Every structure is written in structure tokens, then in C-alpha cells.
Length: 348
Image (cartoon, rainbow, N blue to C red; front, top):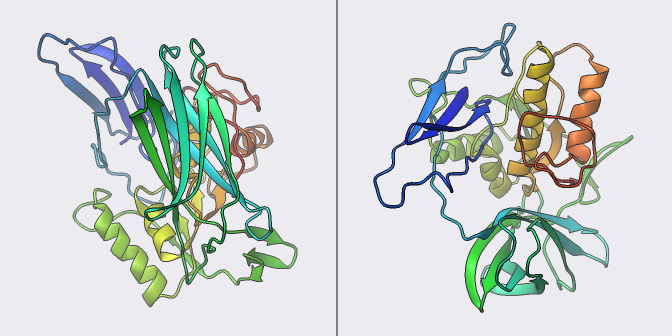
């Protein structure tokens, strides 16, 4: 928080601007395998006018430092970068899960099999395998899981969750695995109001910041969970707005409790220059790709809170939310540009 520059053995590997969404930096090719390595992160916590929400005045504290988890991930040559699992036709007879697996790495050098399972605890409801061709570059692989049998819906009082497990197999052995949790639910905004699973629901909610006394934003997930329980069980909310930025750990808590979420990008009353807008567009992509499997999220907030109209800018953010282009050289859908990201086409 707010800008981070990553170095390995004194070599600058990359920068990320924005303190509310995750990012990764590739270390391969820079590691000294026969010596000790020094991994360093230079953090700039000043209120830089090129990074949302800054540039004007904001009504909340932003603090600084490394305030969320950091991990070192070792992966095979071809690995699973992300998975988007979308339940489809959940109220109809053709209920299914459309799974989009995003693979990264070098060209496939050995026969690989992609296996996708829908699981209810230890019980496998559906499984599909796809063979990956030798010599092809990894990218996006679409898998459809059908004939699921009876599944329970995710709802406010019964937040039923299922697990999608995606594996890469080489020679019958698992080389990489990626697990996400999903729920089957139908959420719609209609002229007559909001419906969840075909039932009209009156939304009652609050805005929420991730700030606590004495520790600022560096509160662990278990306390975020307790805060969600208070909102749900004591205050009797059924929806929460993450004002005014994506909140770490919180959507997962709400998913398990049956609380709906309106999640929005960083900002408050101010829209900056073109570079600022590019970072905001990146925020949209990173927010959605982090949380797109949460059944609790029913709205993506792609406008800056209490900001003036900016048709061109908000056309871009809406295009990203509905079907963003790939900024790593893969096929594109919208025409939005950004400083860095890893977006693909998706529909919530």
C-alpha cells in the first residue's frame, strides 16, 4: 500500500500501482540457483496523484506498508493461473457449470491432461478431462460440467457452497492444482426490484471500511469474519457495500454467511488524468479476477464514488467488467488499455 516495486538481487523486476488488489511478479530467469537470493519490496505509501483514490481529497484513511499476505509460489513449466467457474441456468433443467481455465507458462513440452471436477465435499458430482496438444502455447481452456444431479442453491439463509477442483496431469501425476468455491444462485435486478433465485428480496445493507482501531487495515481474516457475522446476525443486513475499494478477505466471509456484496473500485469524488484512469481500469480487472467466483457478489462498482460523469472513462470500465481484453497479448474483446493486468472475457 500504495505502490510496490519488486527487486531480486538488486534487479528491478516490476512495479504495481494500487493498494487494494493483488498482483504477481515473475521471478523465473532471475533466480541464482547456486547462491543465496535477496527478494526485496520497495513500498511507497505516499498519496500519489497518479494512483486511485488519490489526487483530490478522500474521507477515509489509507495507511501504508505491506498489510496483506505475501507468498512465494513455485509452479511447473505450464501452470494454472486462474479459474472462473460460472453456474448457468441454475433454476432450470439444464443446470451446468461453465469453467474457464487460464493456463500460463512455456509451450507445452510433454503430454498434459486438464481435469476439472465439481465436488460436494468428497463426492464428485461431475468430471471432465481435456487433452492439451504438444507444442501449443498455454492459454484459455473452456470445460463444461453437465449432468450434475440435484444441487442446492446458494441463498441468504442457506449459503450452500460447492468446490471446483482443476488439475494438470502429466503422466498420470498431478503437476498443478487450483481450487475455487462456488454457489448456484440466480441474482437479477428487474423493474420490480431485486430477485434472488426467483424470489423478491428487499435489500438492507451498510457501507463498510476495512479499518480498525490501532491496527488500521492490517487486521487478519478471522476478525474480518467476526465483523461479517455482526453485520449478518446482529444488525440483520443482507447486503454490504465495500466502500470505497475492494476489501481483502471480506468477500469470502460473506460468501460463507449468505451476505450479498456490492464491491467497488478505489476512489472518492475525484477522477485524475489519463494515467490515473488507466490504473483505475486495472483496478476493475484485478478486482473482478480476484473475486469472480464469489456467489455473494451481485454488483461490480465500476464508477468512482460520488464522481462527476465521464462518459469515455466509464464506457471503458463497463467494457472491462462485461468482457475485458487480454493485456498479455491474447485475443481481446473491449478496446480498453491499461498499465498491466491479466484479463479475459467473462460474464458475471
